[in-house]
Image (tube, rainbow, N blue to C red; front, side, top):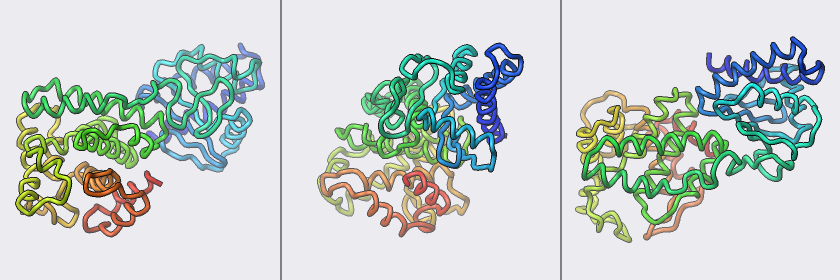
Length: 370
C-alpha cells in the first residue's frame, strides 16, 4: 500500500503540472487535480515526516522507493524537472493548498524566474553541485534545515548516557528518542548521505561519537529494509544505547592507547551484560534497547560474547547494530591505529558475511554505502 500511495503522489504531481500548463488557473479540471494532489501530499508528508522526491534520467525515487515503470506521464515529469534544473524536491509537513498550487504552476511553466519564488514548505534544487538561483543545495544541508543538523547531539547524548547510568530516569530516554527523530529527519532531507553525516560528528569522546554514528547507520538500515516509522525509531534508540554498559567500565581500559591485555579484554567483554541489566531497570518504552545491548557482540554464527545457549534468532536490530558497530570502529581513528579507508573496511567486513554478519542485512548495508 505504501508503494502504491507514493506512486500516486508522483503520478498526481505529473498530471497536475500537465493540467497547469494546459488550462487556466481556475479551470475545474485543474482544481480537481490540485485538491487530490494536496490531500495525498499532506498525508504522505505527515506519515514520513517530510516527503522526498528525486528525479533521475529514467526513473523517480520517492522516500528511497524507485519507480521505473515505462510510464509516459512519469517520463514527461522527469523531462519537465530537467528543464527546470530540479533533481530533488523536499516537501515539509503542513504544506498549504495555496503554496502547493503556486509551486505546481511554477513547474508548469508559469511566469516568474526561480529567484523570485519564495517557499515556506518546499525545498528544491540539485542533489549535488551548483543550483539555480533561489533553489537549495540538497547535497549536504537543505535550506529548510539548520546547518550541521546533528550539531550538539554528541553533547546531549553524553549527558543522556551518563545520567541514565547514574540516575536511571525516563526523561533521559526521551531526550535520546528526540535525537533519533532528528536523525531520521536528517537522513531523509540529506538524501541518505551516510558518510557525510558521520563527518559532522566531533571526535572528542569516542564512545559518545561512536554511539551516535552507530545510531545513524542503524536508522539508515532500518529505513532501507522498509521497517515502519515506529520500529525505525525503536531500533535507532536501541543502537544509540548499545554501549551504555561501558559507563561501568574503567576509563583506563576504554582509553588505553594500545591493545588490551587478556584480563582487560575480559573486563571489557562484560559491558553487554552490564548494559542490559541497567536498561532492564529503566522504562525505555520498549525492551529493544535491553535486547540490543545484550546481543550486539553476538555474531551471526553465535560466536562472540556473551555466550548464549539458546538457538533462537537474534533480533534484527541486534544484527544491524553489530554491522554498524564494526563498520564505525574500523572507520574511526583510534590512538593505536589510523582510520581504515572505506574500500578496505568493506573488504575486511565481507570476509565475515554469513558468519559474523547476517548476509542479507550486510548486503543491504553495502548498498547504502555505495
